[in-house]
Image (cartoon, rainbow, N blue to C red):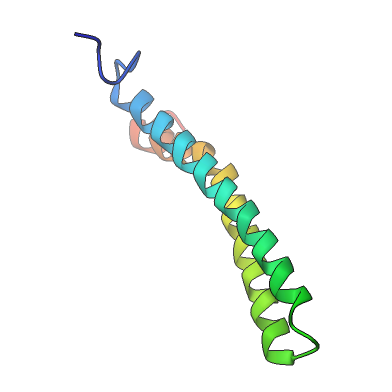
Amino acid sequence: IPHPLGDVNAFTTLLLKIAYSVGMRVGIIGIIMIMIAGILYLTSAGSPEKINTAKKALAYAVIGIIVGLAATTIVNIILGILSGTG
């Protein structure tokens, strides 16, 4: 029977793989949200409420991409603090 977790032999490796996977998915969703924000902005027809909605969607998408890209780094920092090496 093959090992279901692949080459994961330590809990920290498992956490890093999960963080990488979640980070990639959050990044992809962020890119899709940027496209949606652009569509919202283009279809706003000058309405201030719709423009504000598009700006908020863009801001949240950018924040999500930043968090997604930093996910592995955040987990490394937390693991370093908990292990006493960082």
